[in-house]
Image (cartoon, rainbow, N blue to C red):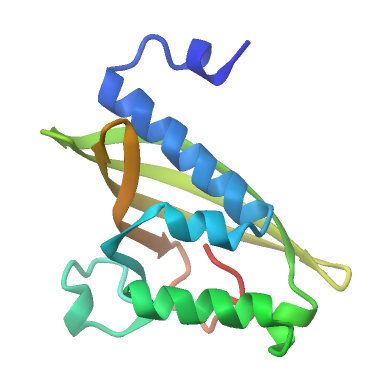
Length: 166
Protein backbone atom coordinates (compact mmCIF):
# COMPACT_ATOMS: atom_id res chain seq x y z
CA UNK A 1 0.00 0.00 0.00
CA UNK A 2 1.40 3.40 -0.97
CA UNK A 3 1.31 6.54 1.13
CA UNK A 4 -1.20 7.94 -1.36
CA UNK A 5 -3.54 5.01 -0.63
CA UNK A 6 -3.26 5.78 3.09
CA UNK A 7 -4.22 9.42 2.48
CA UNK A 8 -7.07 8.86 0.02
CA UNK A 9 -9.84 9.84 2.48
CA UNK A 10 -8.29 13.21 3.33
CA UNK A 11 -8.79 16.59 1.72
CA UNK A 12 -6.32 17.26 -1.10
CA UNK A 13 -4.51 20.12 0.72
CA UNK A 14 -4.08 18.07 3.91
CA UNK A 15 -2.93 14.97 2.01
CA UNK A 16 -0.43 17.04 0.02
CA UNK A 17 0.91 18.65 3.21
CA UNK A 18 1.25 15.28 4.99
CA UNK A 19 3.25 13.87 2.09
CA UNK A 20 5.49 16.96 2.26
CA UNK A 21 5.99 16.65 6.04
CA UNK A 22 6.82 12.93 5.81
CA UNK A 23 9.34 13.72 3.07
CA UNK A 24 10.92 16.39 5.24
CA UNK A 25 11.28 13.91 8.13
CA UNK A 26 12.90 11.38 5.80
CA UNK A 27 15.41 13.95 4.54
CA UNK A 28 16.35 14.95 8.08
CA UNK A 29 16.76 11.34 9.24
CA UNK A 30 19.00 10.60 6.25
CA UNK A 31 20.96 13.82 6.95
CA UNK A 32 20.25 15.03 3.43
CA UNK A 33 20.49 18.66 4.50
CA UNK A 34 21.01 20.01 0.98
CA UNK A 35 17.66 18.55 -0.15
CA UNK A 36 16.05 19.70 3.13
CA UNK A 37 17.28 23.22 2.43
CA UNK A 38 15.54 23.13 -0.95
CA UNK A 39 12.19 22.61 0.83
CA UNK A 40 12.34 26.15 2.21
CA UNK A 41 11.14 29.42 0.72
CA UNK A 42 13.68 32.23 0.84
CA UNK A 43 11.57 33.94 3.53
CA UNK A 44 10.97 30.75 5.55
CA UNK A 45 11.55 30.73 9.30
CA UNK A 46 12.53 27.67 11.38
CA UNK A 47 11.76 28.13 15.09
CA UNK A 48 12.20 26.12 18.27
CA UNK A 49 10.77 28.40 20.96
CA UNK A 50 11.53 28.07 24.66
CA UNK A 51 8.16 29.49 25.76
CA UNK A 52 5.60 26.83 24.81
CA UNK A 53 2.84 29.42 24.35
CA UNK A 54 4.58 32.19 22.44
CA UNK A 55 3.42 33.28 19.03
CA UNK A 56 5.77 36.27 18.75
CA UNK A 57 8.91 34.33 17.91
CA UNK A 58 10.96 37.36 16.88
CA UNK A 59 10.47 38.96 20.31
CA UNK A 60 10.95 35.74 22.31
CA UNK A 61 13.94 33.71 23.40
CA UNK A 62 14.28 30.62 21.19
CA UNK A 63 16.58 27.64 20.92
CA UNK A 64 16.46 28.22 17.17
CA UNK A 65 15.19 31.15 15.11
CA UNK A 66 16.63 30.61 11.65
CA UNK A 67 16.02 32.55 8.47
CA UNK A 68 17.61 31.39 5.19
CA UNK A 69 21.07 32.66 6.13
CA UNK A 70 21.04 31.01 9.56
CA UNK A 71 19.70 27.72 8.11
CA UNK A 72 22.58 27.73 5.63
CA UNK A 73 25.08 28.35 8.43
CA UNK A 74 23.52 25.58 10.55
CA UNK A 75 23.71 23.13 7.62
CA UNK A 76 27.34 24.14 6.97
CA UNK A 77 28.18 23.49 10.62
CA UNK A 78 26.42 20.09 10.55
CA UNK A 79 28.15 18.98 7.36
CA UNK A 80 31.61 20.54 7.66
CA UNK A 81 33.08 17.90 9.93
CA UNK A 82 34.67 20.57 12.10
CA UNK A 83 31.99 20.93 14.77
CA UNK A 84 31.87 18.22 17.47
CA UNK A 85 28.16 17.75 16.76
CA UNK A 86 28.95 17.06 13.10
CA UNK A 87 31.85 14.65 13.63
CA UNK A 88 29.81 12.25 15.71
CA UNK A 89 26.28 13.21 14.70
CA UNK A 90 23.37 11.36 16.25
CA UNK A 91 21.38 8.96 14.13
CA UNK A 92 17.71 9.85 14.22
CA UNK A 93 14.34 8.31 13.46
CA UNK A 94 11.26 10.52 13.34
CA UNK A 95 7.63 9.58 13.40
CA UNK A 96 5.18 12.34 12.56
CA UNK A 97 1.44 11.83 13.09
CA UNK A 98 -1.78 13.36 14.48
CA UNK A 99 -2.16 15.76 11.57
CA UNK A 100 -4.66 18.58 11.97
CA UNK A 101 -5.46 21.02 9.20
CA UNK A 102 -5.32 24.53 10.65
CA UNK A 103 -5.87 26.44 7.44
CA UNK A 104 -5.98 25.90 3.70
CA UNK A 105 -6.27 29.27 1.98
CA UNK A 106 -5.34 29.58 -1.64
CA UNK A 107 -2.04 27.79 -2.12
CA UNK A 108 -0.99 27.96 1.57
CA UNK A 109 -1.61 25.06 3.94
CA UNK A 110 -0.96 25.13 7.67
CA UNK A 111 -0.86 21.83 9.55
CA UNK A 112 -0.22 20.91 13.18
CA UNK A 113 1.14 17.49 14.06
CA UNK A 114 3.01 15.51 16.69
CA UNK A 115 6.57 14.29 16.29
CA UNK A 116 8.40 11.59 18.19
CA UNK A 117 12.10 11.62 17.45
CA UNK A 118 14.60 9.11 18.75
CA UNK A 119 18.26 10.01 18.56
CA UNK A 120 21.09 7.53 19.08
CA UNK A 121 24.63 8.63 19.83
CA UNK A 122 27.46 6.89 21.68
CA UNK A 123 25.24 4.15 23.07
CA UNK A 124 22.59 6.54 24.37
CA UNK A 125 19.02 6.74 23.06
CA UNK A 126 17.38 10.13 23.51
CA UNK A 127 13.64 10.56 22.95
CA UNK A 128 12.38 13.97 21.86
CA UNK A 129 8.66 14.76 21.64
CA UNK A 130 7.25 17.90 20.07
CA UNK A 131 4.21 19.52 18.59
CA UNK A 132 4.94 20.80 15.09
CA UNK A 133 3.42 23.50 12.95
CA UNK A 134 4.22 23.60 9.24
CA UNK A 135 3.05 26.38 6.94
CA UNK A 136 3.66 25.30 3.36
CA UNK A 137 3.07 27.23 0.13
CA UNK A 138 2.37 25.04 -2.90
CA UNK A 139 3.02 26.49 -6.35
CA UNK A 140 2.89 24.36 -9.49
CA UNK A 141 2.79 21.24 -7.31
CA UNK A 142 5.97 22.17 -5.44
CA UNK A 143 5.83 22.88 -1.72
CA UNK A 144 8.04 25.39 0.09
CA UNK A 145 8.17 25.83 3.84
CA UNK A 146 7.28 29.32 5.01
CA UNK A 147 7.31 28.40 8.70
CA UNK A 148 8.22 25.41 10.82
CA UNK A 149 7.69 25.62 14.57
CA UNK A 150 8.93 22.82 16.81
CA UNK A 151 7.37 23.11 20.28
CA UNK A 152 9.32 20.69 22.44
CA UNK A 153 7.18 19.31 25.26
CA UNK A 154 10.07 19.92 27.66
CA UNK A 155 11.22 23.23 26.16
CA UNK A 156 11.53 24.94 29.52
CA UNK A 157 13.83 22.26 30.95
CA UNK A 158 17.62 22.36 30.73
CA UNK A 159 18.16 20.79 27.31
CA UNK A 160 21.41 19.50 25.85
CA UNK A 161 22.47 17.75 22.67
CA UNK A 162 20.21 19.56 20.24
CA UNK A 163 22.95 19.44 17.61
CA UNK A 164 20.64 17.99 14.98
CA UNK A 165 17.72 19.52 13.15
CA UNK A 166 14.31 18.84 14.64
